[in-house]
Length: 211
Image (cartoon, rainbow, N blue to C red; front, side):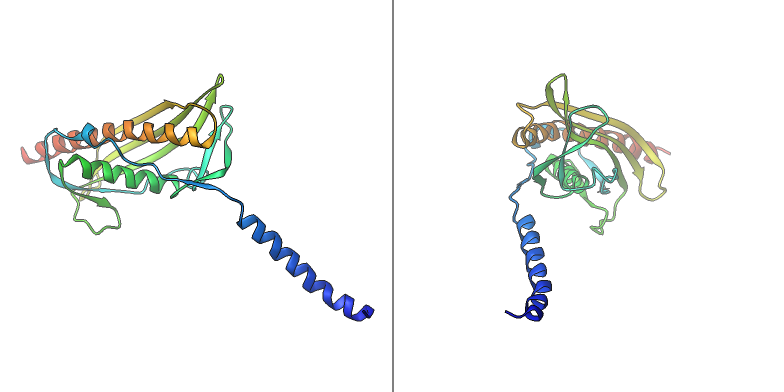
């Protein structure tokens, strides 16, 4: 092979090697985790409300607004499970489970996302502050912490605000154990949020009607 031909093939070989490298990265196996809402009975049986609610996509830091499953081995530090993903970014995932929680309660006329076009009376805004597996003193736990604010949808006035926190022990520090703890924790904290929202919204509604 002539020197000129060998030189002309070098760029092609480099491109093929680069493509091969990229394909290898893309083929790295990972598991997608999709938490289910299983706590419908926990929110049923309470008083019904005659108003509608929109649930905004929770705000969060850039690190939390991702499909990456996070772990905190030391306070103030975050790491990524390399072979684990959530089905949606954590804020979107939380929003969909919250909406499902309200729907499953059977206690509200209508509920949907802010983009659903629902003619709402109230809006639920959430600031997601923690959504990671924390390991403290060798004990792993799934931590879900957020601040909720209920707004009058017309006046944009804050009706009520409340902090929620759920720390659920995990069987281990691997992704599968973390997922099981997260699913359990979400099924514990979402009913609390549903009950609080319906109670505070109902009280605000009654107060407005009494004026």
